[in-house]
Length: 271
Image 1: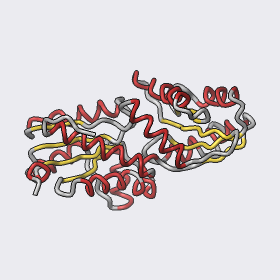
Image 2: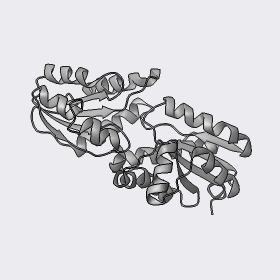
Image 3: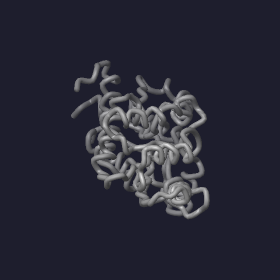
Image 4: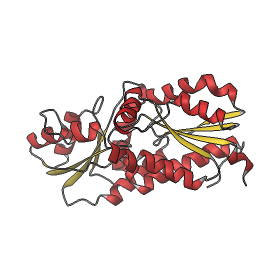
């Protein structure tokens, strides 16, 4: 038995989603892969959204921990160490909130390590782009448009940077925008049009395919991305598939847990 792992809790922190099929295919799938990689550890999930936790409990009878509840549970199970691994895209407001919620519990453990978000480095972004490009072959003059959430936090630059990196890495047909920040849908439309693409596939750059993917991206309302791209003259297809559904992207989360575990041991993780 690995004594360190048996005394370690791995808490996967997500915003959460009430779209059950996507939740199972993404958040739960990531949790299962982390548990499979570290069977001796105590692996659990926590959602930062109180509304989603309450909805899942009332509608489905599904109890999901808050960050504080997950940490209290780890204490009750005798865990001495904790890895708090976010499923967030970036170091943004959600990541900061996660750390603020966990801070009062740090003194209850010998060591607490915070894992990296999905797109923490240019290497991570490369892996995400490759996973999406490999899984979604496109026709000639067809673009893959990735719809991220966007944030008012300064780290929102990551979306434009990812678009730029896609072009540098040989994916001229991948474009990145956000629902709530920059680049906005109209910005992406202008770039796709300038690049002479006639057809687009819209898909979320989010862990889950929840409300934003189903409504803001693929809905029939006037302000949905599908409607806006259609009105701009594009042939539009939508792919309602969260990032957590891609095996190669789930692998990134498992690797980030491995990096956090190495930090817990006081080691530098070897490739």
